[in-house]
Image (cartoon, rainbow, N blue to C red; front, side, top):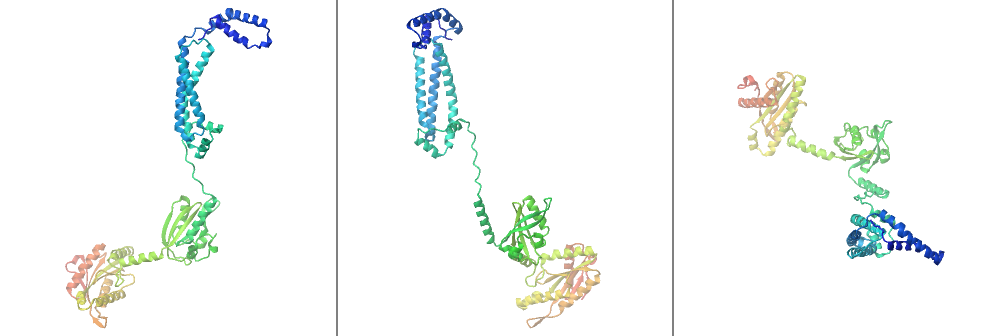
Length: 510
């Protein structure tokens, strides 16, 4: 602490106080008396009290501490400012004041460092306190400045380049206070700007493009709005828009369709649960795709494919007429399951036809008969005549077999010269015998092909469900064994297979 202990110092203090009094207010005699009074008071009264109040005299070395702290802090501030100016570059809109400030701070730092090095005898206690205060402020500034300037630099980098360029071209322009306040505030993580919202013009343009695209589409396109009751439950849908193909599909004009109810116009089409599916799409937003045949007289097409999606508070339905595709698929499926020459089902449908007959027999408590028919010496006929004659023979045989059985029975071409007949709903074994005799009689009648009369012989084996066979395989194996026995017996024979006499099947007729 600083203390006043000498009369010379007291004299200097009170002379300074006396100088504050205007000279015109005192005469020369008054001034002399006033000075004497002050000197006496300072030497006898103030000095002891000041000494006792201020306490211990400050050592000379302590007076150099503030100068050292201020000097080092100023140099640190100057270094931070210079680094900031270099890092900011052209982004700094007011760089010249920073440059001047850095120079001034550098000079102050060197001045205080010089004062700390040179010998000095500080005796004024007020100057010492001010030096400590300046040291504290310089230290705080030096500590905070490295953290504040990076935030300022971040704000500057986020400013538009045009603003920075204008500020650079006008160094004397004044920066708004709001901008300076924003610079010293903590900078948070920048958030990405929200996506631009399309205006009404863009929305109308998109709608126009959508409508134009749907008008040129080959599919039928509909937009429905739900019709709700007082409880908010969807009870129907209303046509709000459709394209030209939609008019062609429904065979009605647009004026008749728009604002009409779905149920009134189509009376709920043949697709099962279509209305419930549409309502489910509206509720869950999950698309629905379905293919189904149509039986409506007022709808053009027999097979349709619906693709239903949710559209805001409604649904959009794309309807594709897949009639041609379905016909092609059905035709290809028919070719894979039917003989191209005779049109009869092939082996691919044999198991299905037998299983259906067995199921019907179980339901009606009836019998099923499977006949395996083999044309004797057909290969030899093919060698004698050309292939066209052989094809004509097969077609004639198939036609005669169709005429000899019931419409509920099935005839299948199993191979080049083999046929299978499945008869269901048979009550008695005698009926099977009569059917076998009829088949032999039909096939042994000569056939006329290309002005030729050709004799056909056959061998027939039969097995019966559930009398002689319990499964599909048992029926086929039994019929094959019986047919082989009939062929061994001679031409135009048919044999009924029995498990008890498998080695010697029962001959029904010759």
